[in-house]
Image (tube, rainbow, N blue to C red):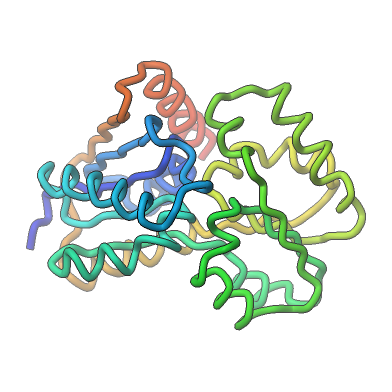
Length: 254
């Protein structure tokens, strides 16, 4: 087994850093290659065929770069391309992120819940199966068109205006908020400013546990000192800088 190979992680931008920071907590010794597809961001408004083509190109690159496992750190890409990629590359292990609605079912079933996600995720067959299976009949679905893009651009003024306009109506109505896009944990504080005290759920911690279990079961854990490599489809230095700033602040906070 390829113990020294990298763990490939990709997203339509830097939002997947919220997934990587959870993985690093459990697997600090692994080598990581993070791919940010800022050139084609956002994925949420693209067709299934477009998303599959983009993911396919990234996966080819990650395989060339000696990745032993690939994490899709984008809810939209996971919902629309995961099965396609597993069928096309049966030799590769893929792990996809998905909205943490089952966690609401497990831990806070009776509480009103707001699911914030991209339109692409909410429209997907995979997401609708999840809702149907775990529906608490107290759930609001909010397609947050354009929000991931504003987070990607780090425009705080526009983010706050967007949230005020789109989620103020849920203040006092919801107790749980499912962050159904990997960009959204980056603005958790801003969401809380509007909604008050709510419980946040996102799929990254469970994905990290699942990933660790797979590596242990397959005897693929790396025992050396891990490194983190960042690539951006536009080669933007500002993306690299922000990525490592978020990652380092998360690690030092731990």
